[in-house]
Image (tube, rainbow, N blue to C red; front, side, top):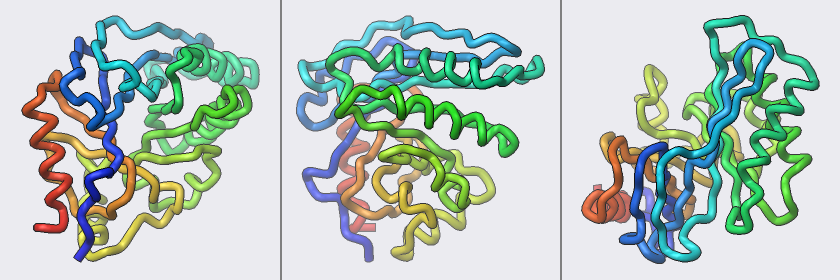
Length: 231
């Protein structure tokens, strides 16, 4: 039976693109705030910042999250110059003094994985000293060899809305197994509206909520994580 996360299990609340007041969490959780959105559209890199307010306690916000997506309505014109432009845009959202970790959220098709890896490599090269580089990932990516090429300190596999591969991954974690890719063994991501899978302890847990956070939602999620070993 897997051990439950200890009381000091690192918890990080995702603050997505909506108004949030997360002061209720205090020192019980860090905050990863969505700070930037970048769209790769044809031959253009279109970037914008967060549009909604975030209220948090001093020192609570540690992670800048930047979401990238490809506009598939038009053919992507991808060059070395465009890659450098995209990386520069990502880094522009991670210059604040409070940023201890930059997390890239970029879901791509199989044919687009070289684009993701190239952007990550360029971001890594320009990252300020002492800032960690993180990325989100579909849980199924953690079973594929290509992810090992990602130049990141941490991969956060999303253990919700996993699709056809979900049952197999959940069963393996419940049986005490783990992800194939070692970089996926440092963090994980769960959602308040999805049953939490049994998962290894001692990892940073990113908490997603499909609605604005409340103290009650956070307390329930924390209790569910602490009860993993009691299932």
